[in-house]
Length: 146
Image (tube, rainbow, N blue to C red):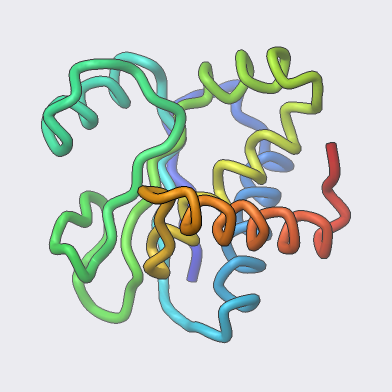
């Protein structure tokens, strides 16, 4: 199950379905299973989460809370991979900055977060290349390109 939660009234059902599809595509691409909760939030809340959990007091685009690290914030602890928090405002700004659609940016952030839950990271250049390749592969398979 992939649960998308938000208190933003203007967040569309289509965007919710897109995020659900993107997370599911990442999980299936890795031949994995598990539940994920996705929080769509604003700049203030993501900054608070970033400060509380990462000790970095600034806004970011996506945060992940892998169950295997013990930091999940939304879902109960049975049978899930973890939680992803996406900042809607940052997604809007980044879509404009990178010159692609908001849908592409939301899908990218959802896939990125899901891959983190599956153990991928980008702390080294090699790991970053691998993760970027996976993200591109998954988004292309979904028919979402720049």
